[in-house]
Image (cartoon, rainbow over all chains, first blue to last red; front, side, top):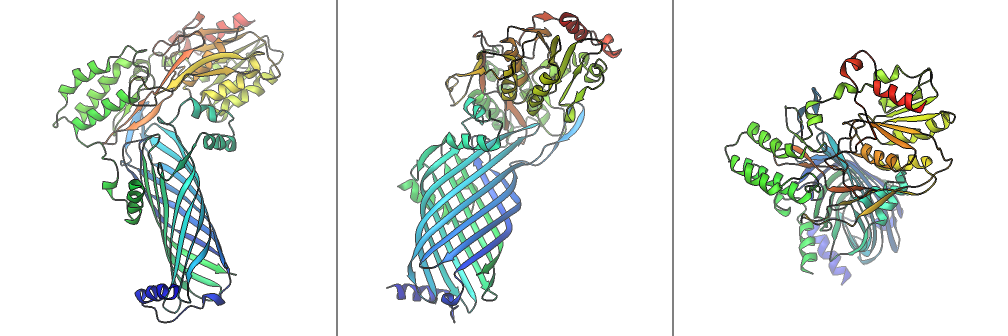
Amino acid sequence: MKYYYCLALAMVSGTAELVAQSERPVQSISLELGYAHIARQDLVFAPFVYKGDAPLNFGLAYARNRATRQELRLHAGLLQANNTAIYNYVEDGEQRSTSLSFFTLVDLDYFIGRNIASSNRCRTALGLVFSADVQALNYVYGRFGSFGYYSFFGLGLGLKHEQAVGRRGVVTAALHVPLVGWQARSPYLVNDDEFIENTMSHSGVKTFLAFVGDGSFKTIKDFQTADVALKYEYVLSPRWDLGLAYRLEFIHAPEPRKLLSYRNGFSLVTKFNF
Amino acid sequence: MKRIIFSLGLVLLFSACKKMFIAEPELHPVAIFENFWQTMDEEYAPFEERNINWDSIYNHFRPMVTEETTDDELFHILSQMIAPFDDGHLSLTAPNRPVYFSNRFYRDRIDDELFSRDVVATYLAEGAVSGPDKSYLYGKIKGSNVAYMHFDHVGTNFLDFNDFLDQYKSASGLIVDLRHNHGGDFTFALSEMGRLTNVKRYVFRSRTKNGKSRYAFTEWANWYLEPRAPYVNKPIIVLTDRYTISAAERAVMAFKSLPNVRLMGDTTNGAQGTMIGRVLANGWYFSVVPQKVEMFDGRSYEGLGIAPDIVFKNDLEDMRSGKDEMLEAAVAILE
């Protein structure tokens, strides 16, 4: 059955020869650098969709491909976004300028799974995913700004499929869907006494932990998030791959006010196998 | 289950189509007016404290707005809607025009020149310390044994209050100047003022809107001054004016809870709740106060300001000639 499954995928992809995956080193480190775009509507901060781009968007991943497959991936992005154009205004007789809101988004994902189908041409792994998303949100409202946060630490399912394409290409598609987890977000109206109390230590780490501590347990019923990745890598040598990646992060959180966020990223990928 | 399938379906669309989001407020004068009024209605907290009938304001101004209303007209209408609040936290920002401040002191800069940091600096003996970006200024008053510290805002600059207290252990009295203090994060004031008390003191309580109803609030949260060693017990005079606002007023509440403190100067601005920002469909920004605050005496001073124990107002001519009479009077009391 596995054979026919992979054969069918191989026919779809129209490949000719196989990359000898089994002969390659089992560990790899890859670096992704590229562009990201965000469209985010968070009613805690505004009823508008904030759209913007990332001046900085990078990912770093370590993978180990044995019978048990593991991948640890860190992804960070600094995105600037707004729902309106920058403009000048006058305060205290001086000309001033509005500025963009900016979001610092950091994700750490750990996937551990086993192949459920494999051949020389392809393999599909299913496993568990631990996801940690931390987002620092700086919304700017002309004269001043407000700080907000979002964090999620969850467990879910991960599916990863790799398909050889041509003699030296590999396409990877991955889906991570957290099913349960601990989510913390800014309160209903940006800051309240609990929020302020959390900052009372004046220590970044303690404040962060206090914010996280104010979160609550969620399941996929009341909160949905997913990461989708599509990657093409070209095998330059047994050690080095070069490729392109597309990633989508989706978040839908209805409480305390609705948040819907899409982050699309396109990156260049350099992978070192060892 | 349907929601899960729907959400995953959204993911698979691989895009952020506008239709997936909640409909945004529309971009035309009537919709902007409605969005502005509704946001204030749902998120502004101290309507009662400021004696504002927001429904009446709607009824008065709504007929003035049509689809043909110009930007100038709309800006004027929205400004006039927040004018009766006289709230130091409320403002309206739009392109290429001055920010409109609801508070008449901020709007017309009334008595703005009755305080000058530069004038104060001339009263300090050699060795005075100035914080980065003029965030604080402290030193010994020339020819006296009175120590003085001015805070420009409430934030990390309050962390230097500790050094100030250490440096002037032998001072006969302290002047803490909160005139023209534009607020910030009151937790810095509460944490750093701990050295001024040897017992835990209740300072104020506050609660925040947490729903669309005008009566939807979080539970009251009590805030205290917690004692911190080494205890400093000296006569203190806190100087205030109409530009002592927001977190600075909460700091004033904390000072007022101490038995050895007297407030001197003018009444504070009267805007003690937190402030958040909001944006309209045309890109204009405005601010909202989602919080109610009550001082330890159980009263709200929102819209009133905290009155000084010793009323004192500088003279403009004196200030222009480099004389801060209020400061001189405070020194005379402490000597």
